Length: 441
Ligand code: SAH
Ligand code: SF4
Image (cartoon, helix red, strand yellow):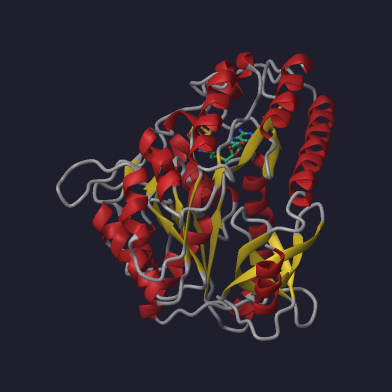
């Protein structure tokens, strides 16, 4: 979502004459779009600000002004305190009000000073943002923001605010615009994307499943994805969407965090291990090639070795194709941060490395199962080696290949020839291949 937000800020600042640069020393304005989810991410902002202070001083010696803005969830959480700790900062703007960045910049231009806005507006920012101006083959589209779930460890409900869903018509029009500019795949974004309940044209609440149906009707849109979903919000319309919409990719990022009922309850996730596995089964019943990705937290307050073993066994039970795993990080203001941080730093590191090893083995096994299969691949970037292209399988696995006639943005059919721990390689599936298949049939 921060990638999406950063692109929207760029779009919004373009009419004011700002263009992106890769070199901070060249920038009249630097916007740090920040993340507060774990301490490590939040602390990174301050080391970046330290570097920016040197650049700002250097530029100022040459008579150039540099405005430093901090956007995103660290801005939201810290507000004024951010400037106290890092006086290099001129603008602090929260994730729900970055549409006000132009007027904040104009204000500090007129009267040197600072601007801070971390409010939650009554009229959502989306009503003010211009339509996106550029899109690659694969684009993001934010449809839902905020969260009302209040998991014990999580800052999102405090930094992104209450759940909000954009109206269906706005989303469909933004998606059309992206496709007109060359997007062939759209990933719908939300902190809790399947809690989506935006209003449709008839004034009724739509579900994510019904929204996906609407988007699938857009000509030229070949792939749809959505992330991140919550296990409690997988309703029948979403299962049906996976059954009925070929463009909806068969991969669901469905974070479980822990495989232990005791921990799920301490985390306030609102479901049990058995309910999670039942949700996986419902989704698998829609499509037999359905695959799953997840997030995990190890070392949440109270987690025992036995709880951790339950997480390892859940990984085996599902066979995730991809996952993220984190050490519990106490976040200010969350209920879990007030509990004794009972798992030692060594235990957390040990559990994380065991879990990562386990996840990597399962992922590698899933990748190896792909060898010999013929799958559509959307080419979305150049590979590291000369002449190599990189694309994504329907299950998001990176696929390396050489295809002299193919271009970025092409969807090509590929036979998978090799698998590594993180990616696949393949060769384009050609007309003679199809002929050979026909003969062998
Ligand atoms: N809405 C999504 C997750 C959003 S946050 C969901 O409910 O699954 C992204 C991920 O960051 C979470 O899935 C969790 O694994 C991790 N995370 C959030 N807060 C954390 C914390 N305090 N410590 C460690 N990991 C955390
Ligand atoms: Fe955070 Fe996700 Fe829980 Fe919401 S549902 S509080 S975003 S982990």
